Length: 372
Ligand SMILES: Nc1ncnc2c1ncn2[C@@H]1O[C@H](COP(=O)(O)OP(=O)(O)O)[C@@H](O)[C@H]1O
Ligand SMILES: [Mg+2]
Image (cartoon, rainbow, N blue to C red; front, side, top):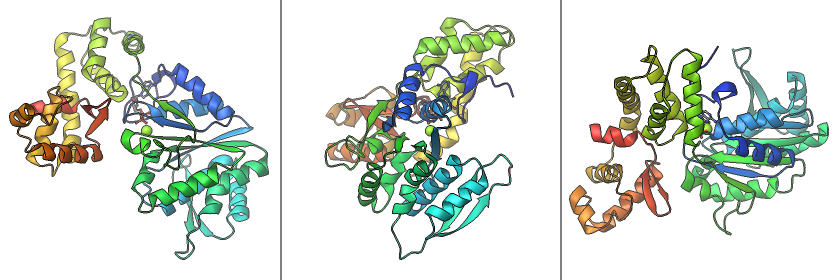
């Protein structure tokens, strides 16, 4: 299918733009076995970047495994998913990975889950005995397979910040690091969205992942790339959007990659030949509409004070939220209360802090708040 604008799925091929420097860096980290952390807010393009670099770097001698641990709620689930991805993605055929499973995971009994979709992923279901909590051989799997096949393996773990939620998280992090750092044929690319959670894994000497690898803070795709991208896509379909209008789209969503694509799509759908101002604004309204359910769910159960805090940030008050004037104007309670609110909203990933300034995590939340 010929895709024009993509959102809600990985950008690739001609829906993928920029990220040249980052791709080059990642490809060389993959090739030369350098561990990497990638951090950015949600939907800026981490998964797309990693998958794109994987495609470029992969060869017969270098296998790149991709695993998403978003849904893994415990170390057991994490290890099972990890092992399953490593087994299936390092082998060409099912026979081969089953044999590897028998050789390297002999202590487990396991079943195979085949997806009904012929192109879908296979996975294994390990029977873990509750008494035996050691996951070492699962975590050693990429090294065991790499040695056997005489190859190098990179394991890319998406939404890695999840491990911060596990009950025995710190202990688990220590185990992961101590096993992984001795592997000679395997390196890791660990990435995730929630900056303060990702950073809490490696931000000081007491953390198990301190100095584990290279750190990439993924930035926004520069406006000039977006303009070229948007103008090009419209032109390709015989429609016309100006540079200025494209810049407006990018600015309206604060350069969030996913929203740039989504808003461009809504504008495109409203345009016969030439983009006009009315359709720009209608498209933006549609975008806010589309996000409303999500925001309602995210803010459900927040107190009036907490909502007021979000409103203050939406109005551009990024610092000094505990100043008397701000507290009064937005009705935020006491200054002690403001500190508690901030902590909670950070945990809920509704706000983020950068250089001591507070921002809404989602750029569409401000227009939504103004609307309700
Ligand atoms: N390099 C890119 N070029 C064009 N669009 C991109 C790019 N990276 C991300 N996007 C857009 O952003 C969306 C989210 O990308 P994704 O890689 O899933 O982000 P993340 O993993 O950081 O949440 C994609 O669906 C696409 O719309
Ligand atoms: Mg992602």
